[in-house]
Length: 226
Image 1 (spheres, helix red, strand yellow):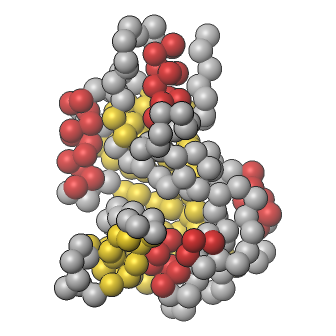
Image 2 (tube, rainbow, N blue to C red):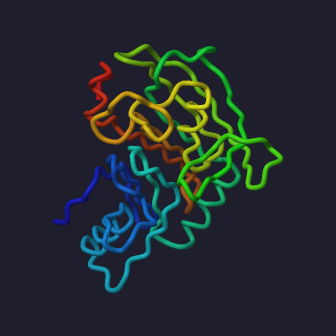
């Protein structure tokens, strides 16, 4: 029996949803570097004894240091239909983050314009009229004070690169462990940002799928039950 390399949250002939560990790129790395896409592709190939290269399409991706739900499509039809749901903002994306300090107000919708800096592999808040600026929206609410910071729940409306990390850091509250965006606090593995929940409509049929990824053990340091 083939064992999945990561916790499988949902699997059928059209979809595979896994919980990504910290430190692993989703995709887009050199052939000699591990990525979630290639590891999961080997799992599918071995489990179903598929000849050739098994199709897998990344529908939702996470930054390497971020943990949690990643959605993959096992057919091109499923990939196209799911991508359409994301484009039309019909997918519910919930994250948990532990940030430095205390957010004021404790609940708010944040709207910024972000621009990629490919040279330095960073993203910056910019003016809306700057070349490459993209509108970026999220809503956060404070869940509780924890050891060394504050636990937030975040509903992501758009899906820009590094979006949550940049928007929170811009307000003076970087994600714990995120040195790229100003955190001065160590985190055991990766950063304290977790894709906790994903809800969408199945691409074949109209049933709703909701997946929740359990928190990694590293979060216990905050007094949060992982």
